[in-house]
Structure formats: C-alpha cells, structure tokens
Amino acid sequence: MITIPKNKKLLLLIFLGATLLLAALAGFGVYIDHPAADGKKVHLFDFAEGYSLKKFAGDLENAGIISNARLFVFYARIRGADARVKAGYYQLNDGLTPKEILRRMVAGEIFAARFA
Image (cartoon, rainbow, N blue to C red; front, side, top):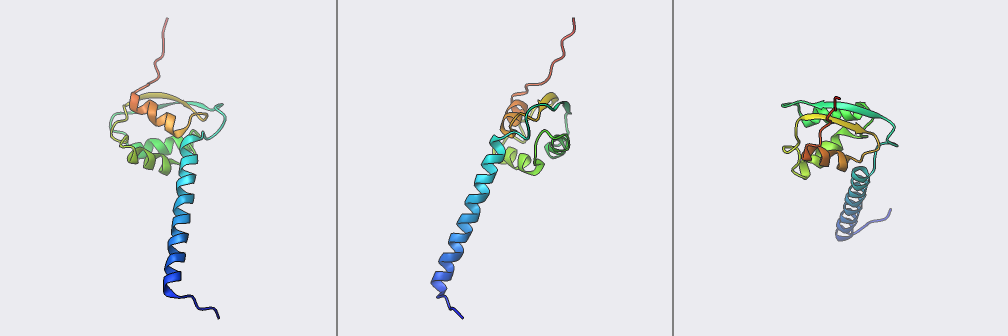
C-alpha cells in the first residue's frame, strides 16, 4: 500500500477542489452566454407584480426558453438583479441567452401590442 504524507494529501485536496471550482465556473459561464436552442420557440410570459423570479424561471424552463431555472435565479442574485426586474409581459424565445433575458427584464423591455 502506498502512503502519502499529510502535507501532500492537503495539496492534493486543494488542487482537486480548485479544479472542481474552475470546472463549475466554466460551466456556469457557458450557461449564461449560450441560448437554450435556436430561437424557434417564442412565448409571451406575464411576470406579474409580486410574482417570484424563482417561479418565473421555472415557467421559462418548462417552456424550453432556458435550460436551468436554478442557475438563472442564481445568476440574477449574484448580479443583484433579482430585486430590480420589472413586472410586465415579455416576449421571449429560446434563442436568447439567460444573460440577455435578465437584461431585458431589468430594463423593463416589455412586449407592447400595437393596435391600428
């Protein structure tokens, strides 16, 4: 059996932990900057006053607009945007990145129907 000195075990654990952290951060970066699909699915969503971002993200995931509701909410929270999203109707498609969807919601770029 091979014995490893304690200081080398600690270094190995630190290295493995850092590697896992970097992999997770890289995956998160890919999620934020890549759309769920090609933009063919278009839906109109009502983000009503008082509706939670967590529930809204679940609606987006169920419709195929985003691929992971939890990561979307996490991203909004670390950006401080979860409290700044504006209520309204949003026309969103699966070709938008989670970053772009959140940007539109914070800016209040709501869907406006035009009547002649």
